[in-house]
Amino acid sequence: MKISVIGSGSWGIAATKMLSENGHDMTLWSFDPKEAALLQEKRENPALLPGILLPERVQVTTDIACVQGADMVVMAVPSFAVFETAQKMRPYVSKNQVMVLLSKGFDKNSGYSLLSDLLERVFLGEVPVVALTGPSHAEEVGRGIPTAVVAASVNQQAAALTQEVFMNPVFRVYTTPDIVGAELGGAMKNIVALAVGISDGAGFGDNTKAMLMTRGIMEMARFGVALGGRPETFTGLSGVGDLIVTCISQHSRNRRAGLLIGSGVSPEEAIQKVGATVEGYFAAQAVHALSQGKDLELPICQAVYGLLYEGKPLDETVRALMTRDKKSETQESWMQHINW
Image (cartoon, rainbow, N blue to C red):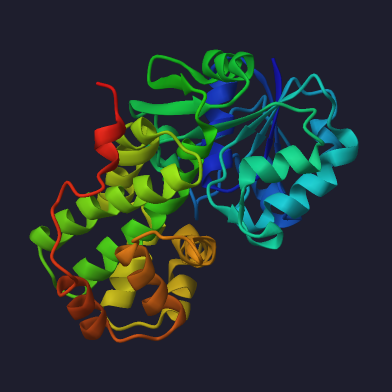
């Protein structure tokens, strides 16, 4: 199969390498001519994925027309670049292609819509969109570490094709029709990972980390169900699974940014020091905006928003979280809606 991967960041490189090893005809597109030249010559980006080499047969280009004639297009750019990149791709995309979305987050320019909704609008609903998401750090995918993800799409054939194309002995793919829940899980877990990183950076303990992760998945599910996701999705790979790996991994940019913020570094400086996109920073703003006017309790998400965008002190934020009104743990639990 002929596949074009759009975006030469860590996920784009890792996905291109894996798909090439799966036997597909691969082209990798880069926005940056210098980065493209580096990948073409050295077959790696030592700053992003040291030691992860692209096979020689992979073509590297800066020409977005590379999507023309591809059987599948894989979108692996940061969330803030999805709209602009999709617009550039539009003249070259055809109805018989499948669009696989590796990007996670929201589109600020369209009222914080899901990225799959954005692609549906740009391509006029003529191209099936699949969100491939789950606990999958590019650093480990590129090294062939056993990984499992979910291909989410309302188009069952497109999800099944994505499963077939990506799956191999070390990369397992499940399918689900719930693209809304899968995308929201993949976006919101970054906010919780920031919270966990801030907690660790401030010197709090494992108890605090467990509290934030457990209550964080509750907020993810509460928000996700309110926006049309299925409750059971948040118990799976794109919910609990992605949350765990992002909160505890050394590869997590959101966790690293949180560690810096918790130690006293400003959010802006922390993001600059991480040196790559911290999706949780943008997701916190999106969830704050989307939750306005809705009767939803999202205390952790709102606390992170206050720290990032309103300059609220950490000690006051923690006190406010811990002294909220008394509640039952199972009150309004999304778990009660699951048919086990």
